Image 1 (spheres, rainbow, N blue to C red):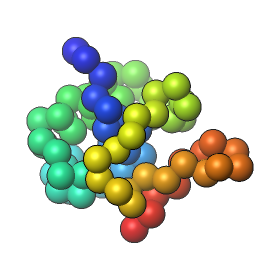
Image 2 (image 1 turned 45 degrees about the vertical axis):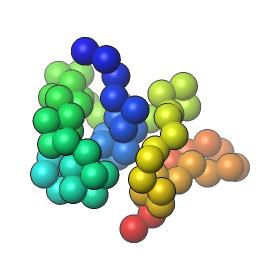
Image 3 (image 1 turned 90 degrees about the horizontal axis):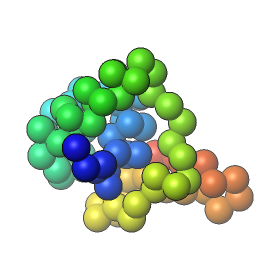
Length: 77
């Protein structure tokens, strides 16, 4: 399976306790994409930290913001 460019956002929202349908709605992507990414996260056993190398530009602005100081990600509501 090809890695979704939305994986960092999906993982962050999943870690915050949102369900697949809500994540898909917020990111305006297919719920099946979200379910596949969440299944991969669960298969790993734990939601890992989002790595800088895995970051892709999101088509939905204002959802996931990367800090310029330390490279960490924050969710903007």
